[in-house]
Image 1 (cartoon, rainbow, N blue to C red):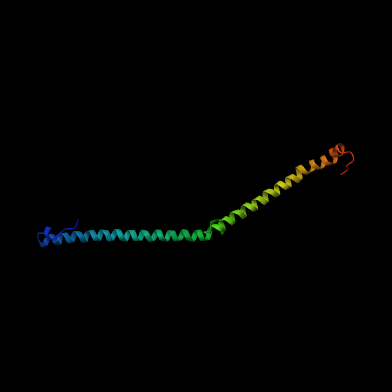
Image 2: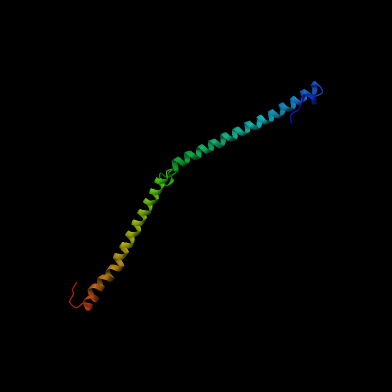
Length: 118
């Protein structure tokens, strides 16, 4: 709390008050120095993390800042996985379903339609 001139009775009280203020300033300067060094350490660690991310983070559009690049990247991934799944289903169809249909056409269809030959 600030002190007014009327509250001081003599010069000794003024000197004592100024000494107290100087002591408080020294404590605050020490705290400020400690906080500045801690802030520099945090800044250096942040810089290290950013450098690590730049080196190790995958180069992909999934982490782009642009909405359209992210959207098209997701669509591209979806399209590719859809092609892969479709290819596996088609191969499964050729292995398991196509022989059954071929056998049906060769054996059952001539008995249902006597004049038709495959």
